[in-house]
Image (cartoon, rainbow, N blue to C red; front, side):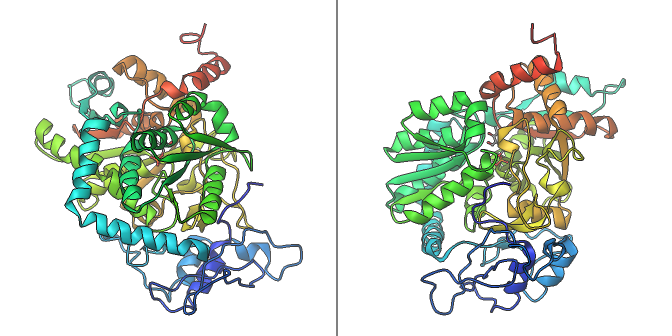
Amino acid sequence: MASLGFVGAAAGQAAAAASTLPSSRSAFVVVGRPTGSTHAAPGGRPGRAATMMTPSPPAGGGSSSPASLKVDTAEATALTASEPQNVPDKTYDATVPDVRGRYGRFGGQYVPETLMFALEELEAGYAAARADPTFHEEVNGLLKDFVGRPTPLYFAERLTERYARPDGSGPRIWFKREDLNHTGAHKINNSVMQAVLAKRLGKTRIIAETGAGQHGVATATVCARFGLECEVYMGAADMERQALNVFRMRLLGARVIPVTAGAGTLSNALSEAIRDWVTRPVETHYIVGSVAGPHPYPYIVREAHAVIGAETRGQAVDKWGGAPDILIACVGGGSNAIGLFHEFKADEGVRLIGVEAAGKGLDSGEHAATMSRGSLGVLHGSMSYQLQDQWGQLQETHSVSAGLDYPSVGPEHSFMKDTGRCEYVSVTDDEALDAFKLCSRLEGIIPALETAHALAHLEKLCPGLEGSPNIVVNLSGRGDKDVTTVVGLFKERGDADVVF
Ligand SMILES: Cc1ncc(COP(=O)(O)O)c(C=O)c1O
């Protein structure tokens, strides 16, 4: 059983409780044990119902039957019907999140009362920063000269030839080269922006969680740059498979804290980071690494990465005089995907495709395909789709890629799934490994294993496409970090062309 942070509590309790509360910004949901008892967090303020997730499964004989804890989408919609909603018609509302940090019925702030002040401070601090031109000047200056933006939109000529029809038509493949950013992935966009914000808020200590290590490296990098203390929580299993990034973080002066709870992967690291933050919120800023977590994180992280799509729009005009037809990105928590998609969400002609990890196959029980197999619940302070059992307990996930090995997804992605604005598909470990090799050999670019999932989907998508659509794949990161893992996996598969 996975070890849990602010998790679990099957969505039914959250939703049911929510429906009895006043729908004001300051009202938060009390989520009780599956028996139905509720717990106000210590120190809760009058007029506010604090949210405290209680992860314990029902001790035998609780009044709820396990079956009643499994909440499917339709049921949850009914349970939340008395709440203000901006879902679910097919029109995408680009103004989300609403003032309560909700994307339709997803998102929110399911955290203990002790963290509410920190989230409110962050929300107010970010609003002030957004309105201040000097904040943007500083962030943009760093993105340009420290990170190396803008990243190129690169024509993948040999991959395009691979999918060409005999008459020369066929999809045209472009790579948005986030792998060329300083530190090797998109993650640094967010770390830079949040570090500048943390400084403005007077924080001296930064914490972060990391899976593949790219967010940890990006955060350790900006902390070195700004002279901030840095502690990174990382699952013990991930530390082994991403050893290169552990060394990089240490070299940069960060303390890497192994998390042995549960499977020792990203979800466990996130839970530990939140626990840390609860104990020292005054001097600490938590740089969440994806569009996950309680509001305002999904929003702040999206805004930090929106530069990816904004640049892509201008570059598409320069390269072919129009907008892309299809955007593809891998989805772990969902930050690189939102970063690319956000700019185009209101362009109905642009098809958005998120690719998650099917691991050893959707029916193997060993995957991280939240969108394909998840149900509504709360994890890490936010309502979204989760991979959970009938008790609301997280399921163990598996992916060859540490960055996609997460049993949830950012709330805006869940919203985009329900509204139909974005399609979500999945790719197995084997398909990702094939794409890892293919991209290396055809394009001279070794992609991250996470990115290889997005590339693998081209193999399924392209043969069925008509005309010559321009497809942009977000090349979210480079694969140096994965080489050791991949050698072992190629050996296991007997890929004699790469392993001798
Ligand atoms: C290179 C790369 N791509 C993608 C991801 C997945 O994260 P997200 O879905 O937030 O972009 C990670 C996570 O570590 C990553 O390192």
